[in-house]
Image (cartoon, rainbow, N blue to C red; front, side, top):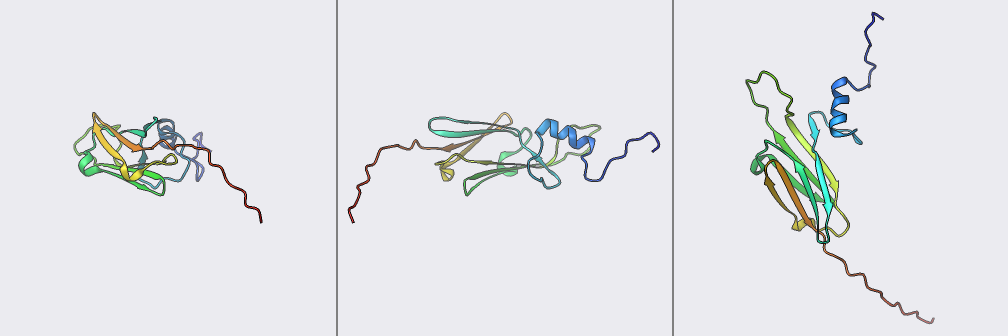
Length: 139
C-alpha cells in the first residue's frame, strides 16, 4: 500500500457516514437518490401528530402523503437549482414511512404546511374500555 487507505467493497464512503450522522443509521435499504425526512411525532388524547421538516418545498405540487394498511408514507421532491457556486442543500426525493398507532383513522388525516414544516394530524378516537360479562353455557 502506498500510504493511502483503500475503501473495501461494500463499506460506506465518508459522505455516507456524514449522512448517517445527520439522518440516523439506516435500518432498511434506501433506494439511491432518496433522503430521509426529519420528523417529530406525538400522540395526544385525540390524535397522532407528525411534523416534518420540509423547507423549500411547494406542498401543492411536491408533496404526496398516503396511508395504507396502518402505514403513513410521506414523499417530497426538491428540484435542484442551477447556477450555484456551492451547496450543502439536499435535492431529489425525500421519503419517510411511519406506523400509525392502533385505532388511527388514516382516512380522516389532515395536513398543513407553514414555515417549512408539514404537520399531519390523524385522529385516534379514544376507545371505551368496558367490562363485558361472558355467560358460560352448560353443555
